[in-house]
Length: 180
Image (cartoon, rainbow, N blue to C red; front, side, top):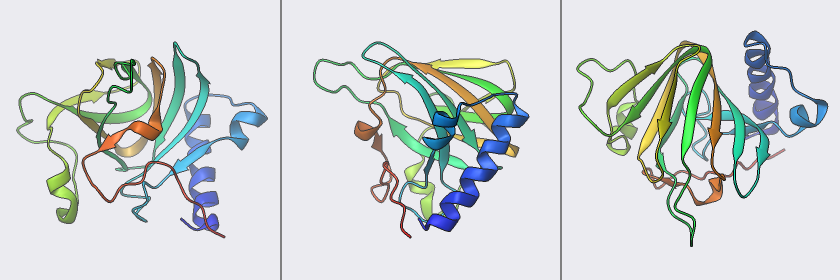
């Protein structure tokens, strides 16, 4: 991702946190992450986030999704003795559509570009509005997409090892690369 695009997405995303009434310290703003998953389609596939704490026992983050932006399908697998991340998503602003294993939604709210449809395998839709939450157990396939107004989601979890996440789409690179 080019630095100019990174800066623009970062700036837009920080405004969503303001809309949600979430205040950040200067250090948190400095360490705010913009992930395009290496696809170069940040407005379609991406996730912006700030990590508040990530210890051996717990993790807390705020996630920002731009309108209709999707975090692609993935799992948090076991790593060594660690059974994988258990996480609770709590919507703070907008609407987020979370997809997990189960009965496929008759009319899912999310839309996926045709060239990526094969990489989205779970379609049981959980709609989260502000104040609503859902907990995922470790190693559960999931993905999520913001509604048309964008979304802010707080994530409370066990230890986060994002670098070990397994994405269904083999083109995805979880750790962002920013070029000048």
